[in-house]
Length: 375
Image (cartoon, rainbow, N blue to C red):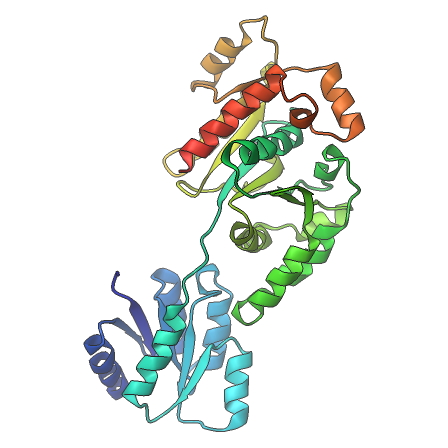
């Protein structure tokens, strides 16, 4: 097992030396900070496996430092044990309610401290799923249709749980493509994830699970915004928290991100944690915007896959589009015209309505590429 790192935040340098002696003998790597501000900075710069936090310090105290750490993406589930000479019940209650996982009074007994540290580090993090974000190069290229059908195909070929998330702004359409009414699930869950931190993680996860709707065995979805006002709350920060829950819940999460350029900073997933699919149609405007999106993305950090929709198999459009993009296409989905419209009107995704169609075959191939890339 890799060496675990413990950050000791305390203004008493004698305690630093004592903690180094105790913890290094137990096989831990020790990093120290002498103020709450420095502790927060060190967590953000190089996250440890656990923090030992003094309460009374100059500048911000341990309670405030813990609050700041919990607001960091890397600090939400970081174990924090308070070390304090204050043995009053109200201090312990404030520490535990303020985001601490445990509270140990000074003078510290080495055996007890090591046992409490072991308890906090014993729990293994749940296995996380992998993320597929789907963007459209422009409106009208079938982004939501691709997200829905790709998710179903991923479940089909992998036999793994798939969660579809509608993150289109200002109003989501995913429920429409599934033939279901909008449940206002996004309006219900966003206020909950806004306050997400360690001490309420289990409760928020429970609420998240309740708002998910099961579409088929092994396939769930989180419906999108029911009204434009919700779009103001749909920030990248809250999306990170929604995905934090979603990637615990399912093996694959497929996110319908809407149009790529509707975002100031598109919510891309970095490699190797997932892939980003850019849906485009053969028309010049769509291809041009997909090309701009490709230039906008750091391809060393993100897998960004162009997927052609509404392709006319009788034309040479595939090769021309690939040349204009300067990169190979990851798939070409044929234009199903009336059959696609009929499937939408019936509220049945085309992949299920026409499982033997060329569209469904191409969708399975695209899903297979995703599945193999994320193994």
